[in-house]
Structures are given as structure tokens and as C-alpha cells.
Image 1 (cartoon, rainbow, N blue to C red):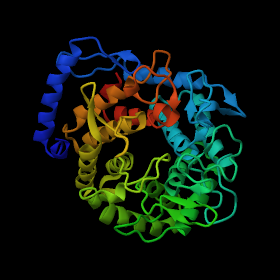
Image 2: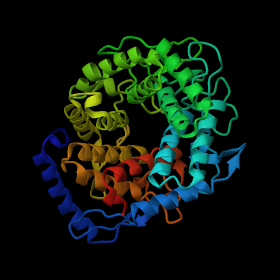
Image 3: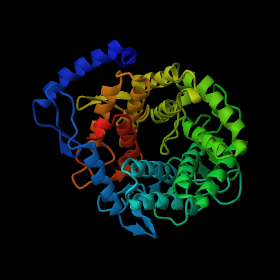
Length: 437
């Protein structure tokens, strides 16, 4: 059935009719979703357990109370954190670049959305930036010198040279994760005017340019993993290229003309090869998550973040942005969606289609932005339901869990629980302010 869903308005409507009928049956009895009793309307649509604004305020306030180690809030320096702010002892692995890069983006967006009233939000963003700059870079040697680490070890100040964990080998980095971290640092520089953040973003951008090769229909311009000492790659394709494109775009606009040509080359590969491939076998959309090394493992995260960028830039980047965004949405709907608690949700990847917090909220935010940018309601309802589902991860005191589908849980993988979720809610509420009421 999934092979034929979500390609037209009619198929979306048919799905919603089936989903509503099944949900009416579900909602007739008591049900718990994540950390709360489920709330449905008379038509079987999942409602928020409290307002989005209230839930996010609770979550952020919970994190503002997080104790510090070595000057950093604990969640800045560990990935697996319990609900008492202490580490899960069985998981010392850590993903500094993605977790803190997306965290900076989240806190800057939330700070702006809430009226720039609380300086503590900028303090958290700076703590994340400081960790990236001071504690999680490769040594100043080799093919990727002073480059953000994709993986590491919790509560290390700084990370040792052989800190690679999860599916990384000890001396490996992931070039695309450097793009995430560096783009976030540019945003942090623009907010604070702290030159340290710009300096590191430039270093990362220049290392990426030095190691860039021509992309093909079999390879991305950088491998998914590389030994920072020798440059030896592992995995021909890294799907997440929109953040490196964002980085080059920002640095170019700040007056660093050296990034014009790399930006053009990268966009040409994305536009002419990667996006069209989503309508085929998806081989150019494999590999994103740090804990997997399957070279055939497609994912939703990279595609939906490309949708986000297309919706932001529109014709200034791509005259065909609506068509290209739709190709990517159809790709994600075809391969990664399923129904949980009567809601169409999005999973992470081929080998794990469960709706973890980062993936499901990225999906909802991307659909919301597409709906706003195009003026079409085609995906608006799906976006709202997906984001409502993600909201159920947040407990009454603000402590979130990494995944709603796990039931009543608290804490866990911090990217999914918080740092890669908060900005998605802000984007969705910016697209449709009525959702924040």
C-alpha cells in the first residue's frame, strides 16, 4: 500500500479518511501517547495536550536548570542524558557536531521567536558554540585540521584525537556534520559578533573546499566519513548537503568570495543529480545518522532539510523549487512514513522507520513550511498532526523523551529529545502563528 500513497491530493484524502475512521475507534477508549493521555477531537484528529507555546516553555525552562560540568550545561557535553541531568552510564558515545549545531540553531530561533527577552537562551547557544570551538575539533594536522568531530566521548574537555565512536572509527570525521556545526557557528557570530565563531566557520568551510571533489551520480562531493589524518574516505555518498550549501551561502554573503564557486558546484550537483535521484532509487540520499554505516541506508532527515532550504530560498536558489521540494516530499512519504496512534508520522531511515523526535518533527516542520510557502493546504493537516504527535514527548515538568512511540519515557538521546526538535516547532509556528495559541 505504501508504494502508492501520497502522490496526489486524492491519495492524501483517501489516507486521511481511512486514518480518521481508525482513529475514531482508537479514541473511543483511553489511550496514552508518550508522556500524556491522548486528546482527540470528535473527528479523531490528535490535539495538543497543552498549547505548543506552553509545552516548549516548560521544556526550555527544564534545560535552563541543567547543571554544568567544566562550565558547560551537561546536555551540551553528552548525548545520552537521564531525567536527573546525569549521563546514562551504558552510553558514553556522543555526537557533538549535530547535537550542538542543531542546538545553536534551535536556541537562536527560539530566542528570536520569544522576543529576544531572555539572555539565558543566548548563553546556552554560546555554551554550545564554545564546546564546538574549544573542545571538539580534530588536531591541527592532516587533511581535515581543526574540523568538528561528528562523534566523541561524553564529558571530555577536549575530545581526544582518537575519540571516534558510534559507527565512526577512532580517527574519522563526517564532512557533512562539519557543515552543520560551521553553519550554526556563522549564525552565532551574526547574533553575538564574537569573531571566534566566524573564524572556526571559515576554517571548516575552507577545509571542506580543499577536500571537495566533483559529485557524480554515484558519489557526493565528499565521502560520508573520512580519516581526518589521511583523508581516506568511507562511504561514497553523504546525503546531507544542504547545510554545507547554507554554510557556503552565508560565508559568500559575508564577503568571502572564495565560496562562490564551491557553492555553485555543490548546488549544481544537488539540483541536477541528487534531487532527481529521489524520484528513482534514492541512492544519493543514503547515510546521515552517526550510528549507522550501511551504504544503502536512505534517510528522511537530509531530504526534509533540503525541502526546508528550498522553501526559504525559493526562486533565489531554484526556479523549480516547488517541483523539486515536492519530489523530495514524495520520496519521504513513500519510504519513511507510517501510522502511530492514528497519525501519519515519519521515521528516520530504511533500517529504522520509527518516528524518533528529530525525524518526526523535521518532517512536520518541512511540510508546514512547504504549505506556507506554496499557499496550499495539501500537507498542512499532516504537518499539524505530526507536530502534535511530537509534542507528547514533553512531560509536565518540561523533561522530554527521545521518542513518543516508546511510551512514558524521559530523557535519552538529546538530539531527538531537544536540540533537533525545538527549532522545528519554531519554524512550524512561524509558518502558522495560530498553532502557537
